[in-house]
Each structure stands twice: as C-alpha cells, then as structure tokens.
Image 1 (cartoon, rainbow, N blue to C red):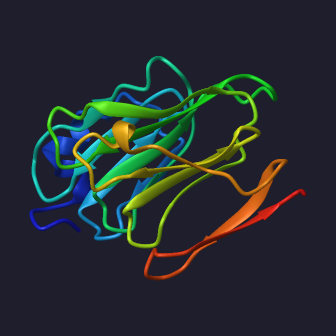
Image 2: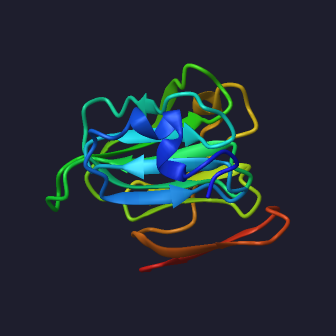
Length: 173
C-alpha cells in the first residue's frame, strides 16, 4: 500500500503503464524507483505524484543500471549485448531536473568494471585502456576524470576502502 490507496492508483505509475518493464530497482533510501525496459530507463520519485522521467540513453539499449549508495546518482551501462560492440557508461544526477547525463565512457569495446565507491563519491570504470575514476561531487564530473596507472593488462576486480581513501585493484598481470 502507498500512503494514499493502492500503489496502482498512484498517478506516477500511470505514466509508465505502456512500458514493458524488464527490471526495477529501488534507490537505497526507498523514495526512488528505476524502471528498466532494456531500451529505456524511467526514474520515478515515489514521494511525489509526478510522472516518471524517461532518461536519455542516446538511443542505446541499457545493459544494467544502479544507484550510488547515497542515491545522488544513477549509473547505467548502455550498448548492445554483442561481445565486442561499443559500450558507454552514462550517469545522471538524480536531483537535477531535467536529468541531463554525462557520458563517462564512450565506445569502450572491453568494459569490464563499472561501479561506484561505497559512499557514492567516485565512479570507476575499467577496460583495456586502464582504470578511470570520476569525482561525482563535482558539478561537472566529466572534467574530474583521472586515469590510474597500475596494470599492464586488464583489471579483474577492485575494492574500495570504506572511507573511499584507498583503492585496491587486481589485474591480469
């Protein structure tokens, strides 16, 4: 049950009734809902009766999406599921309306990792070109990109310290 009647009676849900939902994910605080169709992402603020916002993925299918731990950002891997096809990593600041995105990674054919740090300050992506991180506390995270040089090959896993001050990576080298 929602605060006022059944959940299906919420006006915000009527705006997505025509979408074929394949996946849904709540934000960590429970007030945001992400609806995933494979082609589109729709972001709903459950605390209001506003319609869902369909997010621009630059006409690319969505492979997966997640909220940062603090629910400030929504991150998505966009591109076809065919091996070797280019993949983008896009990020939307949830509180900004309209929801413009920034493309962190564009056209990677070897994207392996895409994750946020424990508190949601950093976005990390790894491919054959190395590890890149962006500071999501910046107004324009695109300008905060840093490349980490630690491996001669691809990176298999990373682990952040809880305070986000350290990052450990495991590479194929």
